[in-house]
Each structure stands twice: as structure tokens, then as C-alpha cells.
Image (cartoon, rainbow, N blue to C red):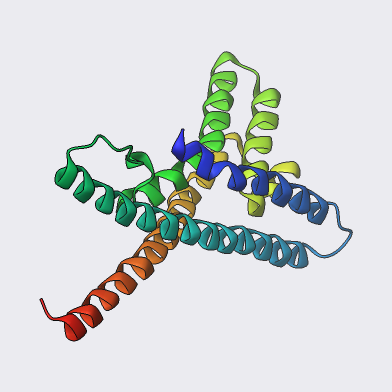
Length: 195
């Protein structure tokens, strides 16, 4: 539940970003202008996810240190204190939440595959176009204009590691900021107070 909760804003931003991409695809201008605008839209999506997951990393590292203090208190007093273990900073969590952000795309492509196998090529193209256009708006213009063949929708899956990497790196960057700050404070305290 923690992963879905932290990915919720990204889901909402995907819908917002896809509306922008759909609007760009309806512009009456040259294709290269549309491609540039769609690329900027995709980059904005990636940057916003980086910043968002940077914040999640900061919060996760703070929770980790708060839980460490709670654990010391549990050992010292023997009291049973609540810990927020699911919210603690772990390196893999940012990447996992990045994959969760892309989960609806993967589900839409699976549905598209099933429809294609059953024999509904046109319906399959519509479902694939919605999934690809919704999640990775760079492809939105091409999917609506039938430039991609049915199997080409799976080319959008190369962006799943890209989104996961942006989310994961942002999460690690935020967590490492808090960890390095904590280490700097410990060194300063050691200089002032000794062991």
C-alpha cells in the first residue's frame, strides 16, 4: 500500500500529461514541432517524477533514522514501540515505485495482446494506442495517426526502465542527502564532544 500511495501523484500527473500530449497531437503544425513539444512534455514528466521521488527518499531516510532511535529505546527500556518499517529508506524502493507508476501501461499492453490474439486487430490498435498514448506521450501522436504497427506498441516498454531509473535515482539522491547530513552532524558532534 505504501508503494501505491507514493505513486498516486505520478498516476494523476500521467493523466494530466497525456491530455497535454493529446492537445499537442491535435495542433495544425509541422510534425517536427509536435515531436519537439511531445519530447519536452515527456522530459517534464520525468523531471517531475525525479523531484517527487527525491522528496520520498528524504522522507524515507528521516523515517529510517526515527526508527533507529525507536529501536534503541526498545532495547533500552524493553517497551514495545510502533515502527514504520514499510516507510523506511531502502535503495530498491524508488525503482520499484517507478515500475508501479508504469504498471497500467503494462496492463494495457497485456490487454492489447489478448485482444490481438482473439482477432480484434482494430480494437487491439485502439487499446494499445490508449495505453501508449496515456503513459508515454511521446508516442501519442504516432499511435493516433496509425504510424505504429500493432507490435510496435511494445517499443514503448523501453521507457519503463527509463521512468524507473528517474524515480529510483531521485529517491536515492534524496535519501543520500539526509544520510550525508546525518553523518556530517555525527562527525561534528564527535569533534566537539569526543567519543
